[in-house]
Length: 448
Image (cartoon, rainbow, N blue to C red; front, side):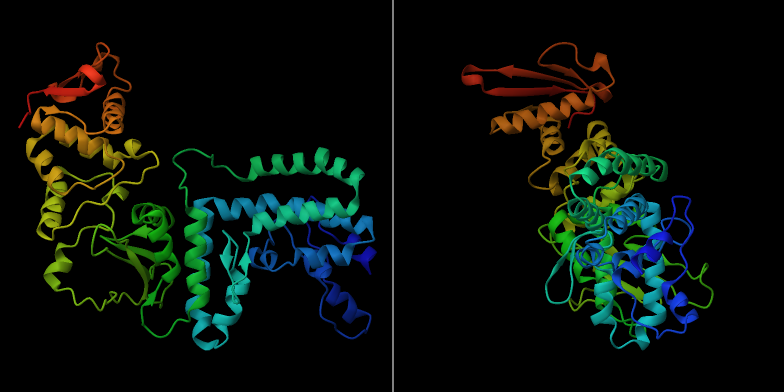
């Protein structure tokens, strides 16, 4: 039977083998539950690729069934090597991840209402596709690409040293070449850093909850990711995955593309204070999420976006309105994500306004975030007061890093050591007193 499976294993050209079940029925033998090997050899990295079926493969059991027959082990190894680049492409490219999440949401809307066992069975089927997650019972399920790589290692170990050398020369290099062809996006700074983690958290929330009428579903796991990594990072990634409609709403299923179906959206609920993170609800039918906080309609109207850093088109008027709203509620502006914060268009736009306009500068300083990254707040204090003596050496370092970043690409902005010529007519000079205490003085046309 194993040899028959090997002979029908997917070729690199990509044709799916005939079903062992069908063959068994043709011979008149009783239909039996397929073995792990039979299920595995039905997987195809080409047009019939099934991500969910691949996720259900039990690697240790698979290798145990193949152990003792090196030819079968080699075919398992070859199939796993062919599947791995496709799995990585499907689970790492934001465009493909978005399509998968929309399809799973469609399954959730259509099938979970009538499936009472949904919260027990679906976490096992969807757990660990994009990122490690907890499945029922508390067991940690590693992400699928890691498990496939582990399967390759198990096959190599079971096949012996010669197979290890062969896999190293032919298999792994071939996998790398396939990966280069299939994954067309690079690992650049523009690629969202948390796509897999956030996608898996959303998928875990879908798997753990049934769709019950139009009742909003709290996205507990997604909200937990926001608490750990910051609301700004989560919101920016969600905008990459789903289209945004207005402030704090992302469309997962658009009725324009699903006639007869109500919209399914993610509602971003802004945090009550700077120390808190945003929370998230899945809303079916366009019903706005309702919180027990009893916030008034006026407060809701004044609510700021969960993160202004996800936008690149904020105007001076919008920044000022946001600062005013925050000051009214005695809250602070959320800190931008620390990763490449100075390279974000929203950050650069705000910094330019702080340099150019005294009213923006004053409004920003009244509600700026506490802690890192602190360079912009220190710069605003310097420009507003004209003189700044940082309390700590690290603050002076952060300020100088901000000044250096302002001068990147503009060689004339810094004329000599300890002096910076900035946009909008500003000049900043550093003075060093006894004990290496640094004092900074600023002069400019838009001084307060």
